[in-house]
Amino acid sequence: MSASVGLFGGARAQYQLRQSFIYLNMEAVLQPEVAIGNAGQRFDEQGNLTDDQSKQLVSQLLRNLLGQGAQG
Image 1: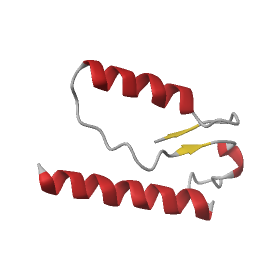
Image 2: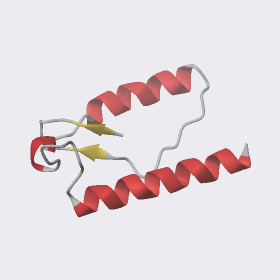
Image 3: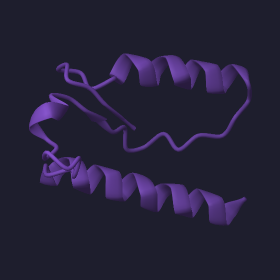
Image 4: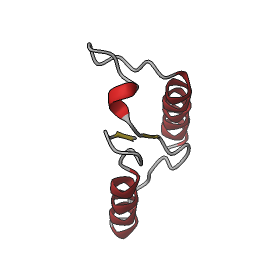
């Protein structure tokens, strides 16, 4: 999960981290990919996420993370 003021929201950084995880044989939650672009418009002054689609993706990512932990 990443957020950036740029259009792609840190997608390239996520890709680089994924390559590192593969090299280190680490487990990762791969879906959904959450890269929040134009973050300045998707968070309020207090740092709360205000974009509904981004909230749904973060929520699904957390559910997937919890599901993966239960299997281990």
